[in-house]
Length: 273
Image (cartoon, rainbow, N blue to C red; front, side, top):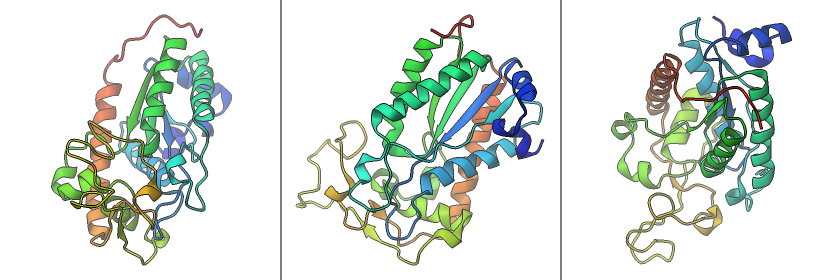
């Protein structure tokens, strides 16, 4: 099956009606953002990763699986980056309502599963809340809010612990991945910035606290970084990016094959409140 056949927006309305009527029909909605990614990466980095990675994943799935991708949502919830020109952020309310309204329409069509395939860390929590509310309103449709980088075990062998833990934005991982997937979009700078773990710095959290993790804070990028980077991109390279790309694609291929071979999560009789 070609990727065009996997794109829900490339179907005619009779084809769309047939598609959502299949048992286990699943739509995947890529989410990204238009926000600063330092002086070396494009504003569209997260949306680019979500869409391109999903295309690669779907191309590797068995052709008979009833799964399609929706058009990517390229504007996201990015208030942490608003101090940097180029960032365009939807309000939390607007983003929330977008998910609810589109999701309600999909549920009314008969879609049984909606997977939110998100590549922007700053909207993970918001999409989880929207997904829960959507499921409550449309109990016949399962909603799965996912983050591109979460749960990928191979990352521990590819990235140093420092970057896995504190390379939060435009650091080694994202820079290397873009060098692999679209090197023409990567500038020459390789910034290291956003240091928040050097003892004695006012930006270093007290013991047990962190920017993200078990005891996080609601941080803004310019609290820690002048370049917009939180991490260290100096060792970024295309070979590492290719390995990251393969690890991510393998992870999501396995997860989607597993999901599509199941009847999980449980849903109720069709009715959208």
